[in-house]
Image (cartoon, rainbow, N blue to C red; front, side, top):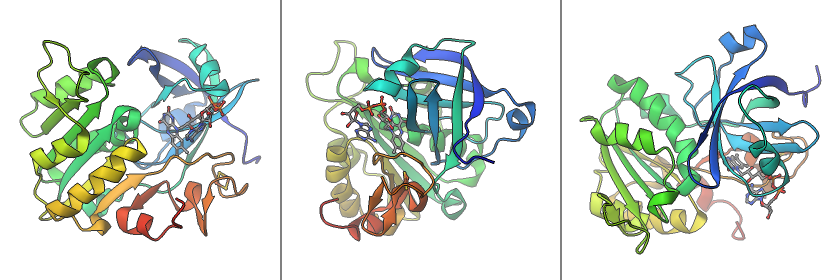
Length: 276
Ligand SMILES: Cc1cc2nc3c(=O)[nH]c(=O)nc-3n(C[C@H](O)[C@H](O)[C@H](O)COP(=O)(O)OP(=O)(O)OC[C@H]3O[C@@H](n4cnc5c(N)ncnc54)[C@H](O)[C@@H]3O)c2cc1C
Ligand code: FES
């Protein structure tokens, strides 16, 4: 079997999250895959538009919801703009799942704080729903999510769901100047809101994803709150081509982000070459 041959998937739903960010729900055309496709939270895939190319996205829906997968993407170039041209009923390609995953088995019985910025909520959303669909397995759930402006928040309906739940602590924030007059959330950068939320580090893990600058300033806050770097997980978005350890496009020193990652602990990131 050709490793690069994609599975055919049908666009089953299209949701515009913001003016430039869209979510596609995809259903496998092969009935055995539709039923049997399995993956772990944090894994990614290569999504293709025939004649235009492939692009790498996380799987944004949780493995606990069967029969479909979802991706959320921003149109930035050739393949992603071609993807924006697709509508419900169109056929495209998907290959995967690839990469490692967030170790939810290890996190069982612990509290989890999810921290995301902008479209970085896509991979984190997969883990959040996985955890909420198996809520009894975990202790406290805290979510800190920020975007530049209110209009840039993705998954707005799901943010409402999480805000309404008694078993989730949700902190939403926008950058200074990004608020609307009726904005009920916080105003400030994500690291400052994490400090204000002050989730307990005792028997807890953190899952962080967002722009590099957000991650850079959030890690010291988590360290200050007492989270050891071995319990802080993030996911990287290096440029990739094959997705399965063959082309060498994604490597950082000895590490292939597509195979050894994309999920790494803060302790592992600290070991990567300095230019990273
Ligand atoms: C594991 C992983 C998960 C990802 N998950 C998502 C996701 O859920 N949603 C999403 O929108 N994007 C995600 N990305 C980024 C996404 O792969 C790229 O934005 C996409 O492939 C661009 O394809 P393109 O052909 O449209 O852009 P191109 O025409 O190839 O490039 C357009 C511009 O985008 C830049 N660019 C392309 N790829 C990347 C990248 N990986 N990082 C930074 N800049 C890039 C290029 O340098 C160029 O400036 C992920 C990347 C990885 C590796
Ligand atoms: S993307 Fe080809 S080796 Fe990682």
